[in-house]
Amino acid sequence: MSDEQPPEPAGGPEPLGRNFLGTLLAVLGLLTAAGAVGTLVFARWAERKRLANAVGSLRAYAVAQTIYHRNDWDGNCILEYATPYSLLATTLDGTGAPIMLIDQALVRAAGENGQPRYGYRFREMQTIGGTEINWVTDYALCATPAAYGRTGRYTFVVNTSGTVFYKDLGRSEFVKDFPVADPTAAGWKIAE
Figure (tube, rainbow, N blue to C red):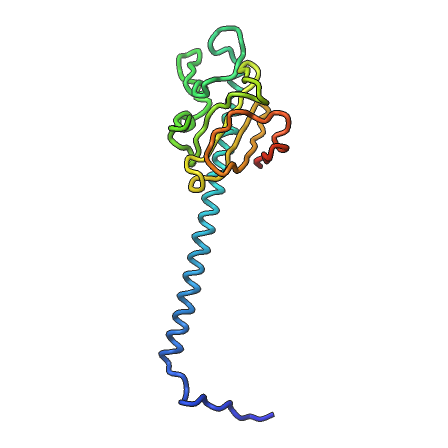
């Protein structure tokens, strides 16, 4: 072994400017990559928050329907679920005050032209397993992204069981029929 230093490259040592510029470009590249990763992480966090809020809205709807069903709000001696679901907020109690089992933001998010709530719109479903919904015994609600890909990718459904299911339909679309037999067999997944 020798204590000799390696020879200088031909032309002498590399100029300071080239090393500095290379280091600066490397640091800028790392910062840009870190910024892109940060943006991606934030976007994923925001999407998860929207999804959690959409699922939470459906669960709040299910709880409100359960409470609504326990009372004869219209005095017809029939315990039924609220349809349209805006009745969960606007039905008057015994003192004349709205029951407000759901908030007005969820009411305003109804239908294709509704004001999105957490990036989603909501609409009652028409059938369960191909049979028209009997609102005395059942309910079903669908939530779909207001702008597919931008505000969400998943469509969610809930019915009287209270279990929320989701599926990526590849577009924003309200589902009309709740797949009663086995939603998972139809490609729906349980939202946790």
